[in-house]
Image (cartoon, rainbow, N blue to C red; front, side, top):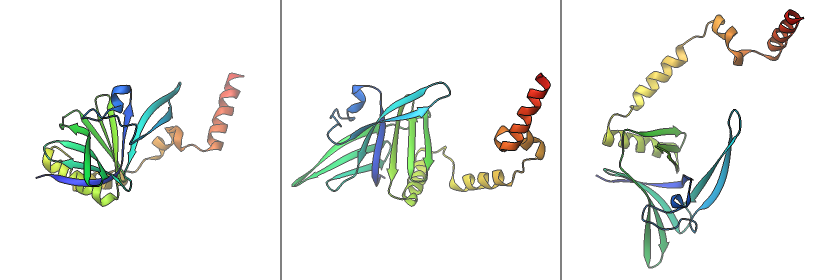
Length: 184
């Protein structure tokens, strides 16, 4: 059985000119925006160029799930509808998925892309169908059970004392003064 969802945004990392082409070879510059996003690493700034495609009045994005994961761009130009296949993926063991609210991030090797659903309920249904179809996924009940276990863990005072993130300004200042006094 084939399942389809309308999505509001599709984004992917562009590393070369080949990445600006769709799966079927069409140039996506006419339908997308190219934006450079920066991330601070420990020693430098890492820039990534992302190609963002949005659903609009005459353009619809759709993700379908059958034995493959397919993302399509539907362009409504009466009297016909043009279909451009953006992604056509066989699900592999090497696929990493990450969900944050209504955004699904996917990484396969060096390729990265994100799809944004219209609401959280749609992404939950998508993940249920994805896990049913491809198996080996984590069920929703198991995730909630794990979250309850993690919330129940208490951090003792010794661990808090050693954790740098739990120190306030005065503790850090006093420790620094002690180090200066020992050095002198």
